[in-house]
View 1 (tube, rainbow, N blue to C red):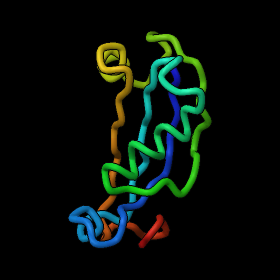
View 2 (cartoon, rainbow, N blue to C red):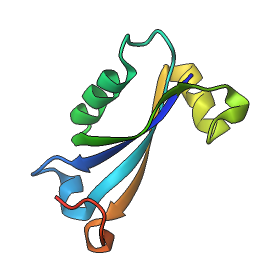
View 3 (tube, helix red, strand yellow):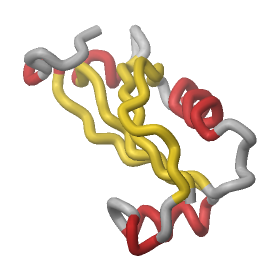
Length: 99
């Protein structure tokens, strides 16, 4: 399973842009889903109203026992991909990304 972390911010004029300053998105993708896991995830996130602004951890092939969360790994096995958002509120952004 490809596992990696992206930094993203909500697109302007979305409901999330009012509440959230940004997010780290933990991404799980089945190999073979796309020839470019980062591009595929960026497209998925844009469709969800978010834009990728950085790569925190590059894609690595990861076994279930080495995954950050086995439950999300299993979800990606069933659905080919899973994206877990760790968001921070606009007011709590501090030195983090603000939009």
